[in-house]
Image: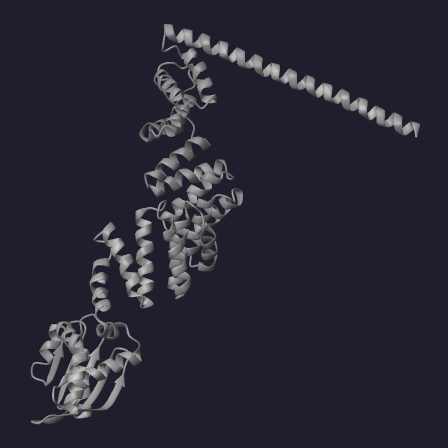
Length: 458
């Protein structure tokens, strides 16, 4: 027991001694630092006194320049080394490379890109393989969108420091901008390994995966970044686009709607594209009112944005006219039912009997027996719901159909226009071509015509 007490007591004494030693060293170290600071302050004052007498004193400039550089006082560094660079042309005692490098680094920090670029080129003429020189030259070329030159400089920088995440990232991004996605991918991935919390680097990695067709890996990262306050809107745009292209409309809508919540922080360009793509999905889902409200916001931002004006004009008509909506966007069953109504009411005071309906992806053909007080005949109707121009081939095919069904006349109705060749083909044939303007009149009056026809048949 006594031995244990002695051991514990000994440990306690050693601890006290250790604390005293460490405290003494700390105080000694602090004293050394204070002494150095005083010495530096004194040297700085002396150098400034010399500069008061001669503002181009190279030794005094070198002293204050070193101190300014250590303190990151970039305006003072720039001003000091600007003079030293000039003096180095005639004074061999000035370290020319260091003068140009520090002058350039200060210019970079101050946003003086032209001065930085010229200084870095002079520094590289002194030393070819300096990381700071090659990295900053590459960064300037990248900012100027000279991606070939940027890649060349940043390759040199990465050879000198292969574990510098920012150099790796900008080299990877330069290669992405050059379309060299395979070469960029390992660089971006390596940069992410070094700094896994760098969201911008993660975004680049996802973009690289996307451009290489590896959409699942890209989607995982974009989805993860949707809640980032800076990159969230763009990540939502990319994620939603992937879902949109894979026909995952519900997920795409969710992505685009989340992206629009960043209205205060996202750029107008990203917001416009989010609205445009969300509107596109809404139109696909037949949510016309929702789509129109988004398209109108885009038009207010930029009246010439993509085909927004055309879409607004087209879908405002659809939204205002139920029958036109069905003609353009209704289900196959609703479209056929609408076409049947048009056939039954096309001729006033006539008995009409539908004898055949043929449904194709491009059109619907309806054959009807029509009997009036003056004539009776078999009439063929073709309804084309695609909004583009209808060419001669479609009309020739319809003409063949007339002969097969032994119809006396054909009526072709389209929500678009007919080509000049199609019109010429029908000049000597019993085929009437109904374009959008006439079709709209029919659709606008269809319900009234149906009621009138029903009453006439009674």
